[in-house]
Length: 127
Figure 1 (cartoon, rainbow, N blue to C red):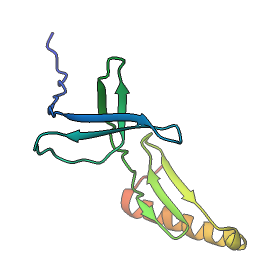
Figure 2 (cartoon, rainbow, N blue to C red):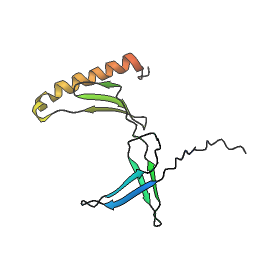
Figure 3 (cartoon, rainbow, N blue to C red):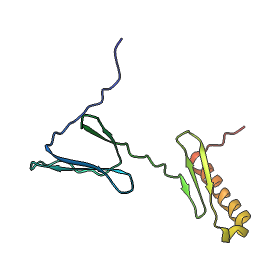
Figure 4 (cartoon, rainbow, N blue to C red):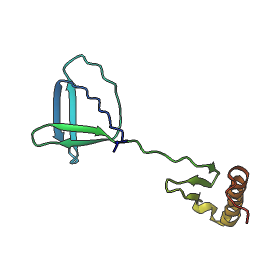
């Protein structure tokens, strides 16, 4: 049986330097690395997972970026989007000062979403 899974490729860069590891006043851990060589690496900024081993080795892995879901339609008080679970979401928000306008604004923006769906996506099936 043929294995069709793609293997993840790893690119490792070795750098010699000095690492200081400690704990901040607020209890969070901190690690600084200063390279000894004149080595050029591609800089990055991201959220990482750090694993400190008992023997002093430290492994740092960048976490994947969160994929943001952009709305299909956005209005003043609402948005209409397709979620990762393949469900459509209509989100409506209103400040406390505008609560008296809730029925009018909700109906107005919901009608605009329905009009958008009928014109662009043809999601409603004919019976």
